[in-house]
Amino acid sequence: MTGPLVLGIESSCDETGVGIVRGHTLLADAVASSVEEHARFGGVVPEVASRAHLEAMVPMIEAACREAEIRLDDLDAIAVTAGPGLAGALLVGVAAAKALSVALGKPLYGVNHLAAHVAVDVVEHGALAEPTMAMLVSGGHSSLLLVPDVTNDVRSLGSTIDDAAGEAFDKVARVLGLPFPGGPQVDRVSREGNSAFVAFPRGLTSGRDMERHRFDFSFSGLKTSVARWVDARERAGEPVPVADVAASFQEAVVDVLTRKAVLACREYGVNDLLIGGGVAANTRLRAMAQERCDTAGIRLRVPRPGLCTDNGAMVAALGAAMVARGRVPSALDLPADSSMPVTLVQV
Ligand code: KG4
Ligand code: ZN
Image (cartoon, rainbow, N blue to C red; front, side):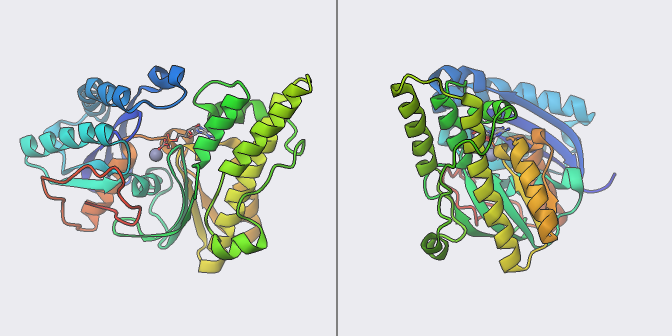
């Protein structure tokens, strides 16, 4: 086991994650989630998330050190998500990371949450191909990224122009009467459904849109069209076939995502596609991506579901890559940047 020993802290949304890696080896991945506290509101409440981070931070740091069987003194560096995310939630992680850095006298790296979603796959599948095409799909973001070097060169090819993919899953689940967060529920009920039951629209795939928004996504029209379809059924006094509608919606999302990701790989001559973020846990997305990549001769990498959702290991993995590449640490007064652009890997 070689490489820098790095502790990573993630607190951009509703997961308090503390991970420890040595080079490409995952030693600990402690995650506490406040998702249940948000469920009755149907979405993440920022203040509730911040308070939960405050309560969970120290226990998660201790749990990670125990799991990794290391002492804080052994660390080579600390890494933390500096953005993007909820401002108050980010601040808790950034403050904790600064405190550790000062108390231990170890370098601090404030990193981008999205780049961390890409970097995490090294702990499962080894070094990233350079360049890698990355599609990140989660509750807060949907982007297609060309990644020549995850430690300092991430280029945005496209992103959602309205709802994020996970947001669409969550909203459609609500329309179908499924609990929050809806993504895993839609995934589950869809297994019993007919994905060809309704031909829902594929956003931004028509000729004109493919010129102006080639690698962008749009899911808000799809969400509205599912809501209208369900509403019409209910008005007619007919039962809503939840599994069939869920499967048809999921098929529309997954079709567009995989089609554009494969097209981007072809056009940029990239042979490696990585899919990350919470929605990458989706069974149908993983299956269709695999089929289409096989056909196109593209190698597909998708981290296991536990590494796709937010966690500290991803931040530690990116931190370790930065140390290994000799990147300069961040200043101790680094900010939490809630709207940190995806192209900025480190603050
Ligand atoms: O990456 P993540 O944990 O947090 C954000 O940074 O947003 O992603 C959470 C999102 C939620 O919208 C959730 O519904 C969705 O990922 N999600 C899924 C699945 N598991 C989680 N969406 C579709 N299918 C799944 N199996
Ligand atoms: Zn995320």
